Amino acid sequence: MPIQTQLPTWTAVTPTLLLALTALVLFLVDSIDPDSTRPTALAGISALGSVSALAVAGWFLLAGTGQTGSGGAIELYGGSIVVDGMSLFFTVIFASVAAMVSLASYDYLRDRTYQAEFYSLVMLAATGMSLMASSGSLVTVFVSLELASLPSYALVAFLKKNRGSVEAGLKYFLVGAVSSAIFAFGISLIYAVTGSLLLSEVAAAIGDAGDLVGVAGIGIVMIAGGFAFKTASVPFHFWAPEAYEGAPAPISAFLSSASKAAGFAVAFRVFAVAFPIDAVVPMGVDWPLLFAVLAVVTMTLGNFAAATQENVKRMLAYSSVGHAGYALIGLAALSGGGPNGSVMGASMAHLLVYGFMNTGAFLFIAMVEHWGVGRTFEDYNGLATQAPVACLAMTVFMFSLAGLPPFGGFLSKYALFYGAIQGGFWWLAAVGAINSALSLFYYSRVVKAMWIEDASGTFDLGATPLGIYVAVLVAAVGTLVLLPAFGPVVETAQSAATALFA
Image (cartoon, helix red, strand yellow):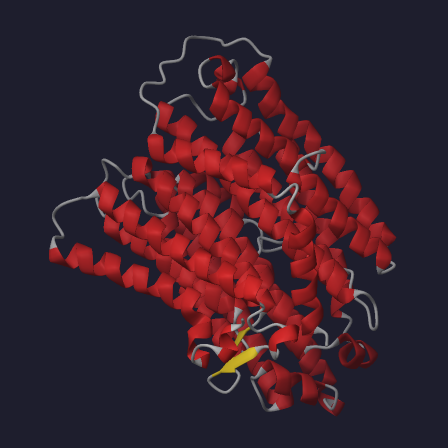
């Protein structure tokens, strides 16, 4: 039974509270004994908190909490926080990625200081992401976005003695500060037009903008710009390759998967609820067209840039920009009266699959960095002779990211492109399919290097980093398990998305 009939209403935010509580516990452990490092205990607390949030969010989602068949969305604090199928679905993504990153960080941080701070920042960022997915007010959106972003800046620059890490953190912070200012100014313009910050009340008042329609249009565009930064979409994508390359590899995984999904979670809710197409487009503010242009430019630029890289980590960074373009189809292929829930739900399902396969790929790079193998495609030559299981997992990630059958990435892209075609946006699906075919070129380079090319020298891998190894295998199993389970996954996502347009 849904929790509406069993537990107090506030318990709907239990997954978010568990993530926040985990961060506070880590702070407490560090404050009691700040001079010692306990990598096993700290990683265990972080992973346990993430798994607990994942389990509760999954239970609520399967029980129908906040969904149409069980009384509808649960609103808290005057509608500022909304718990429904979509918020729970995305919380599953955030908690899953946080759990894998926590496991992998056990080895990555083993001999480093400030371990408790690292895990605490990861949990705080995950808390902000979960709040982003549940935001029912533009104020809550902004506060939760900053809660997710500020820890991320510190995490990117975590390697304080590494010039690349510090430089990446500074660039990320500067671009983030500019985008936050743009986003906040856009919110102020929408408030000036509608007199409210609650998404539902903005939707009711936006159609009566009258002479202020131009102000409303500028506000909507500026809000879209804020989301473009969080999702690493053009033109706010420049921070992504720098940040992902300079950051610790587990944080690259966290940002490219969970942070990107958080940006889309809040963008889906804000634009579907606050700026209904039937009310806004007749005013001349065609935001689906804006996202269509962004989708095409983002996926094309990301894939072409990735194809020119020689550094594997940087290639994955640009490919994540390309995947942001695919996910943007969930906003671009919307129309008044169309099957909007179908295409947006397919985009949500793709982000879930992407969370496993992309996190796994970056964690594999963390393992390679731990071994001291190198960062270029050539450095990977013959690696499968020394680490066949890990390289097999990386092969699964690469082919799934490329969208090859029978991997999860193929089904998620198929559902996304099919949803776009159903909505009459066949050209978006065509551009996505062409870009997906292009991506096979650079993804296959990794597989070719590991399995086909001869090693240029001998590998001295040393001991296998257990935490990273387990996290990579978990990501690979998750990618494969989602293949037979994809039908129920996409149906759940589409049902949650459809409720936004009801």
